[in-house]
Length: 159
Image (tube, rainbow, N blue to C red):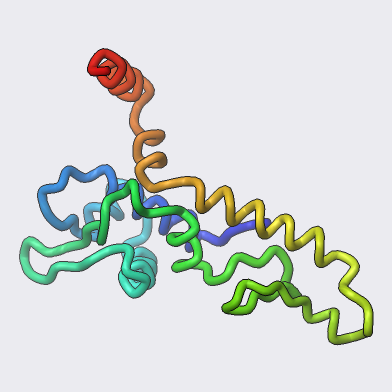
């Protein structure tokens, strides 16, 4: 299963926002430069993230974007679904708002789709992995190894 650059760049945008000290909004231009991503594409992605309630925007000379809530509370399933839409491993695979999985091939005959169980498990596994990963984890993982080791030592000695 491949995700598009929407998911990749959008997650990188969110990680960059999560790296920022809580000193106010960050310009999209600064994020584009830090991540070496096209500004025009990020503008499109941040609009989707804002619409999903994951980021907030501030207008003006010192405006920009910030996380709508703490990185520990943002899961990757929220981010990816805001950018990509429903996670579906196959084109024929559709999930209803109630969470029921439908397969367009089932309408072709009176039998259940032969591969529905497999794709349901794949979708469930991907969703669980994304739901179990927070933005805070990705921010921490993205720090240089020496800095991560220092943070672990500091946390361990504080206990």
